[in-house]
Image (cartoon, rainbow, N blue to C red; front, side):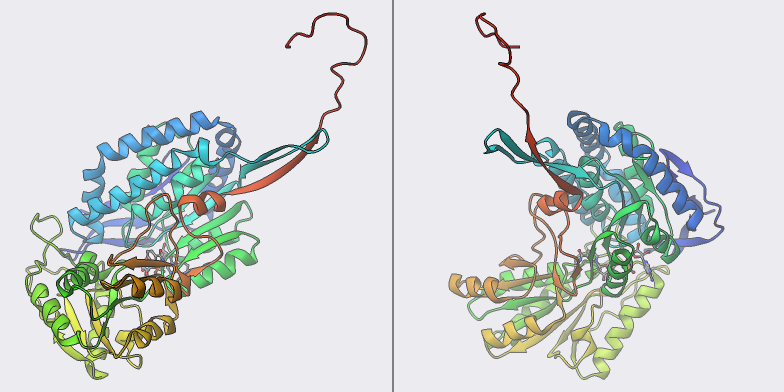
Length: 496
Ligand code: NAD
């Protein structure tokens, strides 16, 4: 028997009437574990109406009151972090320790949002003109939509939801239909923490639900994370409907290894960042650029480490890498390995033959050497456990390769030379840069975002830019006629 996963509207589960559903798999067994309801326009309308009805009460709740809810949510989330990690593993497939890491990064964002009282302080200029004060107020936007991808079913919603709520907005969240259950536990915990009904609603579904949010006149802003073509579509459609939109897209992250790098450290980093979460991370390293003469030695060290990786069901404590999320995604990733071979890349490790019991969506760690810009394994985001090595003759050639990519999400440089690292961080056209750090995801009090085709819009996610995105400012210029000394009063002045 499969479970049924329904929406969450106005503080409680809500069974949709649209009639369409999607299959949610257990990727390690290949079996359908649940059916998820897909929202049509009617369900989207109901969720937005619930958020709109909750808005006056929530935005009118004092900063202390909103913060108390977020603090309580933080405690509940910490107490239930293992349950949340297990849910993520059962639908996404990533190993539980990795899912726990995702939850830990999610909690960072809740902690940041708990600083709302400090973060929402405006400016004040006393006596800007004689007797005139000028000050700014940051106010919520209203109902905001959050649309998230499958690869971080808890962390990405929590990049946005806590900050949006902290700023006084109400939210409609549309999580990925591939692993929708984490969002529901988040909604339940927020309700338990005291969030009023309707302040966070969850609608499940596909393009129909997304389009419903993008066109809805009562939705004032959209935070989207997903692949580049959909991010572009969401940005263009949302802004054409007058909304504020931040749409984070796909990636093809390069890790440059300079000749003076510690090659053992670099090989460890390449394997960790290439195959963690089966490569289904927007900050995964997918291309290692080996600058001459380190290529052969680096490929040997990476290969050696790959042979020791333990691939298996994410629930087993000794597994290091789980399956891919769905059969369709498995087919897509495998077709890239086939294409790499056909295009002349050197297949050093072939993960296609991996044998694991059951019908899970398994692909073993795969390594290509001598890839180049003419090959689809080099140009396209594969989003699987497929690492490519490109060779470059010099620092300049390596930097040129990175900057020629249409993506600009993350990158890393491995070197022992501070001046080279400094030049790299200065000249690389990428939003998040690691120096001897392979996955440079900013901490919660900085903001997350790529450049070029990795982000559409002006504002990065979470941190200070998150608060900026979820508020609009008003500037008040104020003069109060001073009538306090009008009239005759011979008494000693008192404070009133
Ligand atoms: P996706 O683009 O397929 O889906 C993302 C969201 O958009 C989901 O909620 C999905 O239901 C919805 N969607 C899918 N097709 C749609 C359509 N035609 N019209 C409207 N909405 C649609 O992405 P995914 O496969 O879930 O996630 C993986 C992608 O997300 C990768 O490209 C990855 O790089 C990217 N990602 C980027 C970041 C970042 O911060 N830049 C973070 C995580 C993931």
